[in-house]
Length: 488
Figure 1 (spheres, rainbow, N blue to C red):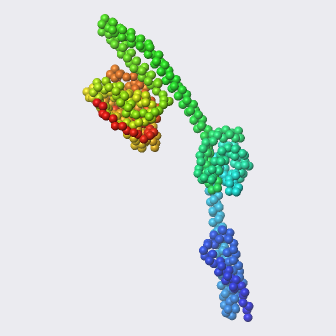
Figure 2 (cartoon, helix red, strand yellow):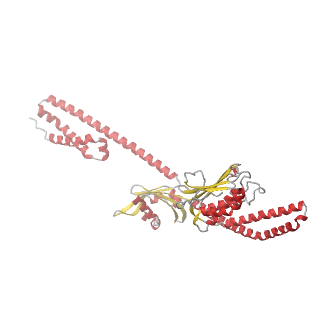
Figure 3 (cartoon, rainbow, N blue to C red):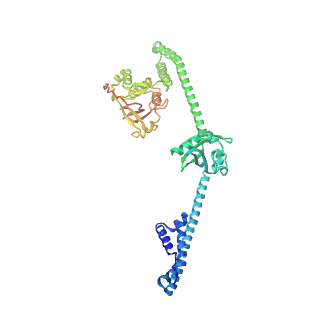
């Protein structure tokens, strides 16, 4: 009688133990994960089956033909299992081979991109002790750091900052590195690099990546040099403008005395000799006196323009009160022109009162000067609060800022809109000086006042229809409007 094979129970236990795992997990995954026990168990079960299947079958059936058949079936199963195992291993090997090739290609592609850029790119991994960052280890650096910092990347990759040099540790850069890792918030800043005989301005961008940081930086020396040159030019320009203003003020002041003498003697000739002269002589005296009058007005406006300073003190200023004072000053000419001037409630703002007075005076006087001979002037002054989105077509306004929009709108002779950008220039005149008095400085003075208050002034006009002047002043506080009466 055949001796029963003692390994049958162990085969069943091994197969029962590993079959659920094999059903739930792909064999390829098991091989790749390095879990050897399931495969070893199955191979062991296979060996036990191969050695004991025939004896077990003889014991059960006592039939030699069945034993031969069992052996034949067992051999076929063995070959099939071996073939399956070979295919699995082959497929796994090919997958790993192609994945490695693809990974190497991607790494090489990324490396070529990083080495092509002129920006330095570095990756540091945080080094911790008792969960506190005490250092950083350089895991990657591209070739650009050689030209930017004078450091060979091959010599420092894999080293800690304390092993490379102490420059970063001595500056605030190290604390910034730690802050980015701990907070997760990116950081960008400028830094003046002084090390290894190299001095240059760098712009750094730091971003957290895993338990470390990626640092990208580039040379901004040219930008800083341009900034310094620009600051120098601005300073020189401001100094030149100051000197020109001082010269204009002094020259205008000094010109008043000889001009007074010309006017005095011209007036004397007109009073004593006018009737004795022929028509040509009288014309000469009239031209002298007219020229001195225009010269006097020009000098007065030059003195006003030169005396405008942005450094004057800003105080709470009621624009209604300023406007009422201006209208009283111009009361006679308003009556002569039979002008109707109306205005909404104007706000109280932080301003330089004397300059706002000059602004309103010039704009009202400008409307009176350029009114029509056959139609009474109607000047409307309105004000509203607007945001930059409502007036986005106006150049020079700051985004997300509230503005007072003050509009002076008249029905005078107007002007061609194509000249709108010229009328605020010094000595710019659109009309014949013989028909309309003035020095050509009034609107330039208006622009300077508005600029001193951080605002913008623009103009719209239509010939024969009228003109509108728009003043935009930033809103510092909530406006308080006072309703005034209509002045006729």
